[in-house]
Image (cartoon, rainbow, N blue to C red; front, top):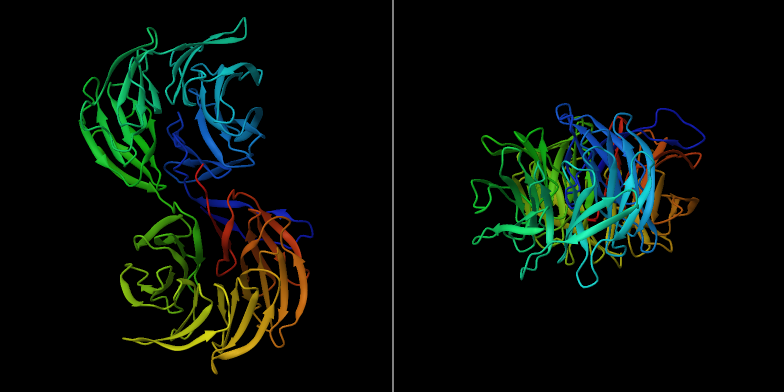
Length: 615
């Protein structure tokens, strides 16, 4: 996940909240997490502990903040007036459901009863009730009154001899009937409001035992359809509670039916765990139309009657598909693994590049669009840097190679093989574009001469005893500083290729920055302290508490040296006054650990990247 946050406009003694301008991200691991609002103008989806409301045509984003942990499910009422969202929390603690007012974009009520996790949510057709399903540690189903904003009644979701219920859907016509399904359980529930009770009836599937992944109800309540982990579809009658039919008999959907949606015109849209999107009809369930998408499908949401629909996948892609021609258009993409590094090209804030696991991506800052994707399968990219002339992106990989790519086309320009023994962990370039300085997992710092045809090793500097986490080069290219997880920062002379100074601290250093005047450096790491050091003799000038909880992983400083920013395991972006050593602004929005943070040239944006974990 990436967040773009505006820079501070004024210096304030008290910490002011930074305005969140844009988020690049989509958590495709939330089942049915992508929703198209009934107004047909907006998409609603969770990202970390935030709910995003994004305009389909203008890409304008609104944010609903209120959850203290990752959002695990989202539901929108039929009228579109309400949004409900549930979250995960720590074992034994209560997990909140939040009821939002869609028009005002604000929190209406916080409903707390379930423990551990909210598995699924559903609204009744006339916006009278909300039904919630607790996670494996909770195992209960609760019906809430939307008008009173309180629980009406609850019950264990599944019987004693079956597994957990994981999905829930309301009747399309009646406010008193809903269905839950999961591991070996399919139940139709009737709400008895005068007695404040819900009565379940177990559906009969005979000898067939299935684990249900997805569920969809026909518009007239005549049938409901269940997608299973074994790749077949069950069609059930809610009145008789009997199995109507099942299929396909052969060629079942690979990796299970992870998303299913009924169309008003008849037929089903089915998404499989291997990314196949299919239009089929009962009773054969043979594909009539199909397309292959990237990543397992977790959400299918209809726009209006289903003439157009949106599909969300585990690889954090959102596709728009027109039903008539059944062709997909990619409208949103982002990293689906922890983002390791972020860098701006010299002198421009229009673009920035990020790396995560097997790919490097270049983004357009204003539109938040992906411009280029460079993929190296089965490898992990640990760090990137732009050459000052903008003609190449230098990247550090865990296979011990340094790879250079053209930033316009993504073409591989050259590879430095065996650059480090235990993977390349950090990389930096000099402003004359003639040198690359790399750090490895074994602790070596290596200086490479980059020529037109050849790349040769100038010197291997063996001082660090553990992996190098960050490298910064002085403007004059005569000196650089490297931070390592062995508790040392070393200032190197790049002319004599020898050590100038060593800084020792009882911490694993994660980040280091030169002050623009280059007589001081600032460091931080796992001890949560931000330290100012004298470059000349390596003495400590000042120490600040960078965070109350968790390591500080990323740091950057403005060109003027007036402010610097930090981000870390406390999930907060902090803007500091360099001279005063005080926090002036705080940015809230991440729910994962911030791995790196950068200020754009011109100080207009702060971009922070994070590891967003699957629910």
